[in-house]
Image (cartoon, rainbow, N blue to C red):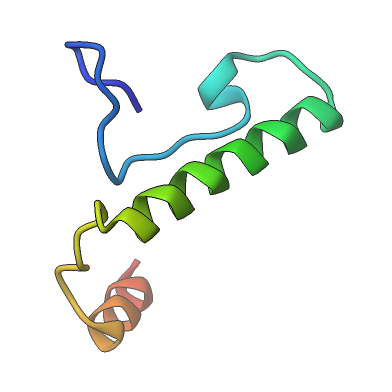
Length: 66
């Protein structure tokens, strides 16, 4: 995701049609997904991702409610 000032928003990621618009084939969508995963891994390895606010149990409870 890109902020209004043009910089990437750390921790927000998109792929496929959300990223490029409603076009492309399975092959282009697959490449786009790989690119997004590479960006996530780069942020993870460099320590730019923040820790989750909750734990695994709180996530399970949230999902059960929804």
